[in-house]
Image 1 (cartoon, rainbow over the protein chains, first blue to last red):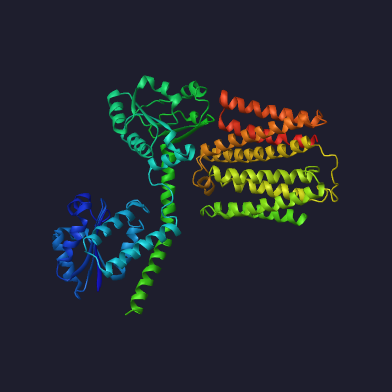
Image 2: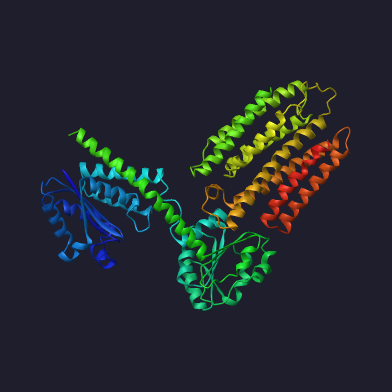
Length: 337
Length: 253
């Protein structure tokens, strides 16, 4: 039995090509089953995420090219798409799957979401009876390798975006965000992304303020918060634990005097301030106040870059694990004939 | 007997080394730190039991005994608080303190070589000594937690957030909570200890009044914390300074 993989991803194909081959999650089982009805295709698993579409096929066709052609035709492949697709066979296909499951082939190196997505795609194919002895073994093994890579290396350590670094820091200060109140100054895209991740962690309350009150209301509605008029934000400051500021102002919006005015009222509780505006919204001297932890965009981005560099340094170790695990399978297959 | 003390010190020392190693290697938190601290605690308990037999009273007569009792009390609170507030990293900070206390107690001259059996024991005095030293265990661990706070605060302020130490530290809020709770527990025990001291046949010496001043200082700090509020950094500095200053109680014995 031969194994091959055919696919495209964010590195080989632009979004318009990826869209063309994208398959909704709920159709993955049916699509996998359809492929097994093709001549020479014994087993198939189709994976489709926003960054990739891949097909894994087990075939007893001696001539792999024929089986590949039939699969390509079935996927609606035309000659122009050729440059965007990659193909690999046998051990290389197995290695590729292990790299995908381990997050080594992802846009954000080491991300964990892909593991669940591949597992789900395999589950759909299994339920649609599109898999058999070969692909069951290949996928189960790849999940084992993926787990080993993640536990034995630090490929998933650190954060991959400014928002997630800010979220981690907030949790390092306040432990559980469920008791924290957040204030967003400026209703732009960066604020929205950052506050949304905090809302997902269940923050107690969100205040949104913006020069244009309509925009503040719109973002407050989106995140289930409360809009505050721009002239009144300092009144709310006494109650909040986290401030996210991202306005387009050319002068600082939050000054030392604003914080000093509410310190006593706050009983000197810790205040985490995230300044993701350029130019900066929060006076630098605010960070010198005892209970204030001030982080600006450059500091957060530096941590993202460091985290990425640390992940990159783990790639060789991950590849070694994959190589040795695939070698083990190959040896077992040779031993069992 | 000294061997038991040295074994207890080695076990606590190993707990500290394991904790530091897991942080440097950025490995997962090891349970062995807690296991070693439990074993050290038991060894200290055995030693205190044997010494109590020799004294026929609470072994809090010479400087060595006070140090061992303090180390035992600190270990006890670490074992209770460490698991309750998810601050097992506290072991890494408190284990070296316990080790130093036990090794210091084992230095020749710190312990009476031939401990005299106590006769005419004043039970209020016994209660006063035992409960007060227990309170010092909680206050010592509060001070250790306060040092932890100051370390994490410094890391956050300097944006040094990629080190293994930063990652292993419990959240700031949890540390502040444990500093406050341990100090409240310590001051509560100290209050009872002082009340027992007041009931003693002979009280009013410098030791008693130094203890009263220590109690007042802690009570004042907690009052400010709960009523007016105080920055966690200032509170942590106070807790550390007050604990060091409060050791003068033993000098006034």
